[in-house]
Amino acid sequence: MAFSSALTITDLNDFLAPGQECIKPVEAPKMLLREPGAAEITIGGDGSYYESGKKLQQAQITLNDCLACSGCITSAESVLVAAQSGDEVLNVTRTLPPGHIVVLSVSPQTLAALASSSSTTLQDTLDRIGTWARSTLRAQAVFDTTFARHISRHETVREFHERKSASTPGPMLAGACPGWVCYAEKTHGAMLPLMSATRSAQAVMGVLVKQWLARKWSKQPSEIYHVTVMPCYDKKLEASRPDFAPDDVREVDCVLSTGELAQLMRDVPADAPPAELVPLDVDLPRLLTHAGTSSGSFLHALLADYAGRNPGAVLTHTERNADWSDYTLADADGTTLFRGATCYGFRNIQNLVRRLKPKHSAVVRRKAATAVADVTAYDFVEVMACPGGCVAGGGQLVKGRSAAKDVEDVYWSIGEDLKALQDAERLMDDIGRDLWGKDTGLRDQLLRTSYKAVESDVVGLGVKW
Figure 1: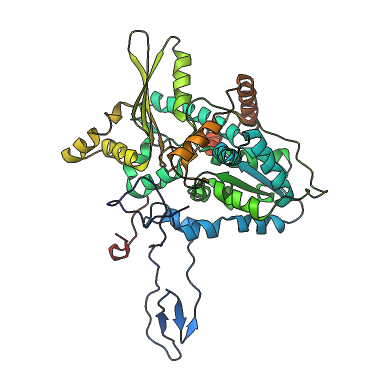
Figure 2: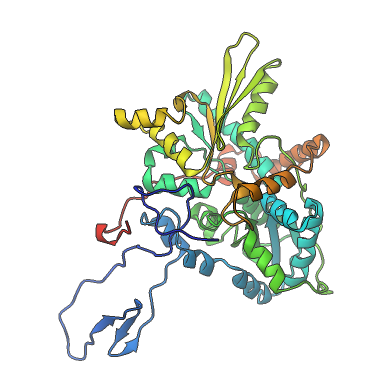
């Protein structure tokens, strides 16, 4: 992946690409009076620290630092790769104590990208990854994340109706994209009350593995090493959020991008799985297809819900540009029942934010009006940072519109299976009874998250313009 220079509010392109240089200020202790034997510290041309000619240890920046810092929109490439990488996965899985379990969860966008590059099917690609993971990572369970997405979509609908009942101001904005979430938390705190609190598919998968499956396997969450493979580097940041690490045990231990998994599979070919490795007996629904978009289909989950409640409703679709589409559901009399939109790419996000900010000048209002309609009239907006949505994520194998279209075609190669979706509904109900029963507070704790505006702590002279 090619990383841009530090992203600033005044110079934005259409990607939320991380910066190469970290500008988080280093906290320095208060200067003390010089004592006998004290040494001077100098900074070398490469940024290293020296004490009397001796090189000192460099400061380390973690993903948690990135989440708490407003200097960059996401984080630096070196931090992303050093914190969660293929090498780390290999090192950890080869040194796990006896009795620990390795679980691999793969996004459907990753499967589509890998299948497109090798001219195979989604099922064959998932099987190939499973064979490799059992051999190389000693994984005892390999899943795709479509069932977790099924739960996330269902919870999004539930949250939407809760907000409607409480007359919460809208529109509700999807919160499954970590690039969009980071941008809103660090630069536009006014957007946070509008954002859906429902967990993304990756975060729901973390609950399924570390909570529900852990109980089924009679394991503690800390005895499971959970790796996910995502189309987006910023999913590494999402997995580092404190909300997703109850009792300091992360629900997703490591996130690999699609490209990182492909490279790892090339570097470490599969052998025969160890004889003592026994597959676990609990499985989840696989390769579920949800009509709508390849970015979670959250908007279409709401459209389907409203259409089911209003037989005979008519859906109209208007494409404003390649990454902005309007959807309106109206009854037979033409009365609007629901209005939503898909908003992908940073330029569209800018226009959306301008229109939704509580106070904006007439100039800003006019600029935004040239790109989108009155966004306050929407009920829901599916927001994703990458142009083209998740199939075109920054962690995918090939970039560009034409490549994304090929991946999109493979993504939809499996049609919607109503029986599989009905089976998923029944299992979802069973999991609910097992994990939270009638405790809605516990349900919200497991299926939702929260957002917090990050106050700027960056010294003006340190910002790269």
